[in-house]
Length: 325
Image 1 (cartoon, rainbow, N blue to C red):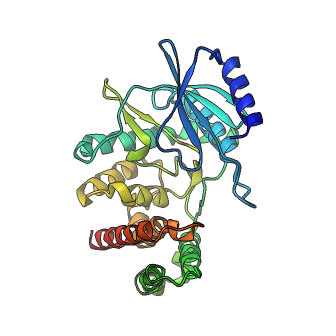
Image 2: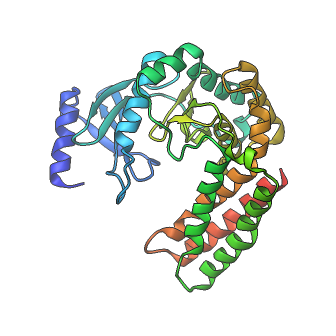
Image 3: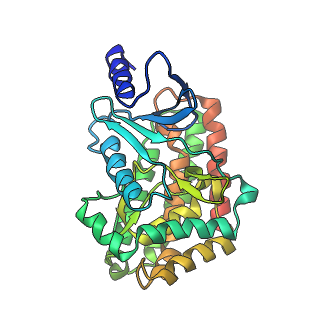
């Protein structure tokens, strides 16, 4: 952060009642490209999120995206998300209410918690909210798509990027072999089983948090859930939303939990009439996409060979798991 950026952030915090002299700031884990801090002043706590500028020629403005989506959810579903305390476009800063809670661990992921996750999505897609979201100008989700063809093309682009890596070290060569022999061939088999009408069929649009999973939820002491991180949220394909939740690499859902989640959304009537069939059809494509995402470090500059070896092994373990489930 430059000195100018620092001054803008301090001015923003001061405007929110956090004096520079009395407030402390501690960096929190997570956030990806962005910086997230716990801001404390006396007994007052808040979360400061500083959005990084868009990458290269990307037109995705994560700050504006999250601001619009979180503001909408906070206005209509305040019991489900932290309050938005302030926003500043010049410093790309968002200030959120601090929520006392913990992220779920593996042994806490059960039918009850999966049901709460489903209930949030259903609440966010009630017909009256659906209409208000459209009026509020909610954007499209990151990597949105409304046909199987869109999702197939996204996975193919990720595969192409990984196969185009030029490093000649053994671990990168092994990665390319895995991507070509396992991921690319799986997509080709899937595509061969689909006819043109299936690929081109357009789905309905639903509001999706996009990066929706147990890594972005806090379990509160009173049993409620608070949902976080809407920088990729917006309109998307309901089958993609469900498939991505089921396949999230750190918490791949067991078949019984996956079925319960999908069936609860289907019963709500808010996610289209053919949700279950569409999810079943899309799972193989999204499994390829998520495996490619696990391999993303191979695309980063200054790659560490030892770290890449463990990442490739993680991708292979994940791929075997989702292929057998």
